[in-house]
Length: 495
Image (tube, rainbow, N blue to C red; front, side, top):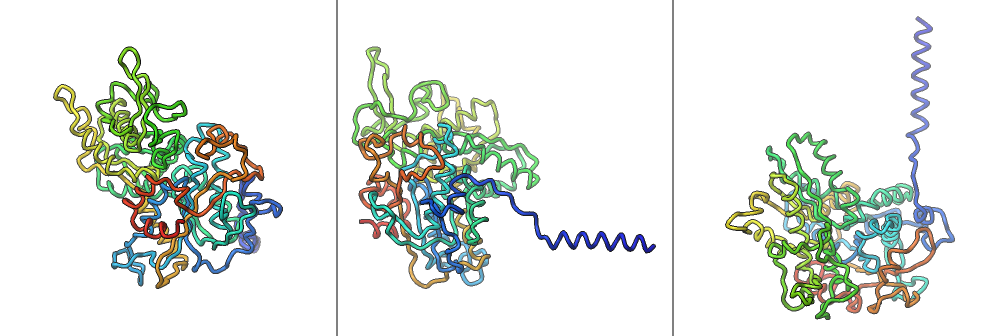
């Protein structure tokens, strides 16, 4: 009996001893830029996290994207009224939930589109860019112009980060989480993908029949498999039994056209150009199908498509030159992909898996209406594939809600009675770059942008404040029309 008691005591002692040692130490697979941020005091990317403020409450909220598309997420944050400000209960009270908060927004315009890096074999460089975006928000300096070095502008650090970019979330979220866990700052990060999938499944939680979910996202996001993987995981977690078909569609040139990237959209052109990188006629996934021209229903007016005609009277060149037409091409391609698959389950939703896409929501809704009514020889081709209660899902609103809940739970809401403020920054090419790396309009050349290597100390782009010289006028007008909260806080800061 004594031997048995001793054995029990010994076992208890071992358990206690194990407990005293604490939890198993986390193992982090740091990429070079994270090692520099954490440990290399000689590096331009060293973050000095030990100097980070211990009280995060008064710091701004950081939001970053590969361009200005992330302003659609910022807009949902700025305009959110889903909670009682006093109690935190989830119901509207007529007061903006983030009233009095300050924000820092970064558009990494010089390095966009993010969705192309993986296709160019540069996924590792994309991860480095995402970490650099995070380091800028967590830093206390900014460049006042492209030629300045070192950075002399002073800015506050942030208390939380929102990655308002699906591709950056897919490729970089876990690395940002890893760096933050090692930083000891208490700063947290939120990505947009989980929020979008949760919103979609919540919206159709009472469905019992099979249905399809479309995912329209950048090439990088689609190739990462992040959305489909997250959908499958959440379907399993929720015990959903019916079949859910996922229809993935890369948004070829869509985000780039919204940000007026000159290789995709150039309003000053009237004829096709050699540098065009958008969809062309062909039979590949990224190609315009001639037989679908009546379905795309492109707007051919005012240079929105650039064409040339050959001796046979047929189009020799056909180049999209407006974001509306990129939206049409990509959404029609998604629904046509579903039709060609042979599946007959209806599309209940399309997740707008890129923050740039909600800018064209009116066009996208119009395309769905056109497809419902499109006929060939009196027969509806697409109507049975589009549910009556079809919806576009914008993950932004659900990302805003998650940001609020996180700050509230951590006690990090500022509760100021002053106005909200936004300090906007945009990346531009380093003013000291050799001209051979730049296009005529001053952007990074495609070859240079996607040919850079990780782990160097080279600073190829610099975040500078938004200005009327670095924000395209067409894009600015779109922001004014569609994102009034963001525009009202950003435009007065621009010089």
